Length: 137
Image (cartoon, rainbow, N blue to C red; front, top):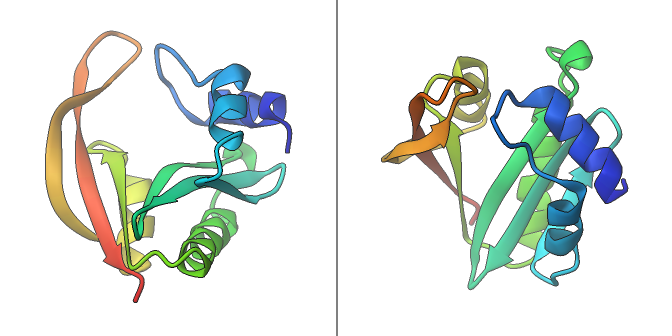
């Protein structure tokens, strides 16, 4: 996927005041620690540093949700992270994003912490992020 396609899908998936730009995706993908899994309908973007994987974002086309695409991207992210020798993985998820939290929990991820006021809604409201982790060993 091109950075432009990633940015377009990400914009459709997240209701944020400032969506990620194609330039931001291009800059991330230009680093040797970042990797991408998925296709035009769903993708996961992650990185591995010092044996720890971070799921930067997981996006599924709103018209294709509930079809297993997000789960497949998450599984592919975990496999790609293991292939890069990651032993642990973490992510941040908006505390009000029930469907994403349910997906992560069903895949064995557990809540490990919280970041207060991490996200901002379009109306300016601050939203906490749950930190979730999973052993990949």
